[in-house]
Length: 421
Image (tube, rainbow, N blue to C red; front, side):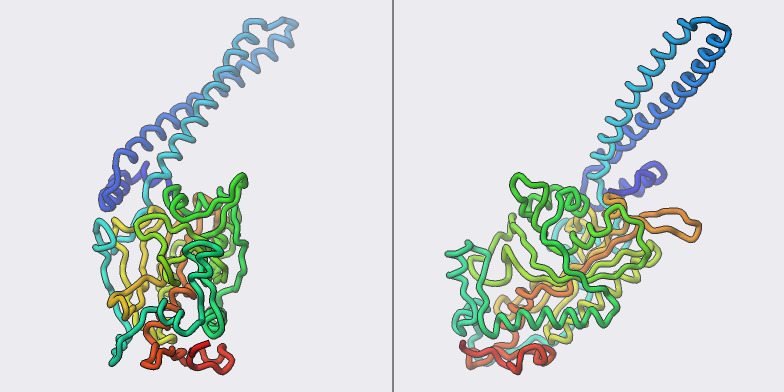
């Protein structure tokens, strides 16, 4: 959630931010109203405590004189009762205030373009040359099935739609992409992590909002845990309630699990939109003054890897209406899909400033030994399934085989071209 002091001290800024996202501004007024009520009761409690202390001294004085102090004791009981009642009320108001506070979006970077939805996202750069073909190209499902390097029908029978079997060289390609990404990020001084695939729901609730939780996360029945949709959540949860030395730069490999509920749904067949996939994620905890520096660094990491794979791509700036509640700014990397004649998302970069850290109590200590909330950033290094789709479709040959990008040759046991199994 955002800092309550932003609403107390800069109400207009918070309201303008909500308006830019076409969100309700009434919730901001409600938070301020509840905050004022809460502070008033706290003031009343402090006054009552002073009265209690005063009466306590009077009781002691009366007892020293050998008197019973019945009047003072009666007053003391009344004051203590009032303190208890007002403390309960204060806690209720604080809980209600924070509930509404959590509905207010993070303050966006000034460069975020105004827009209603994904149609208003802004293209900021492109890289690479789109391949041209003198033959009728196949989509990735046709290539996989014709080459016999995967099975979508068997996975549908065994596990349902949204899963897949990888076989032979395609399975090796999946592992080659993982090894390439690990070597690539290790060379950029990011610490490698293999995280748990389940997290407590409290941690997930601090990383994303309830609506997103319901759409994407597999919850374990009768358990206080859920499967992760990305290792971003695990890396964030690794430092819950910690005081950390900044910066901390991590990258993690994990399997990820998503419901994919919503307008996109699950593909009938294929690797593009699935319930289970492999992903390497980068994550940074840093000083607020350095978060935009790391935003640029993490963007560069992903783009350089895409360039090494020789995949044409573009970068989009996410507009205000398409920006998630907890993000201050976000870029998507989209790879060219020749069979679709359009770009498709393969990576998403986000600076969440102190929004997530505030939810999960993650702080750093400054030079004056004061504690402040860190800034958190995340970006996809690569998700192997979607990169495999891009390689299959962009590197296919007239023979129906698929050339392996040169950067992956050292990890493919000599395989330079994916052929019929």
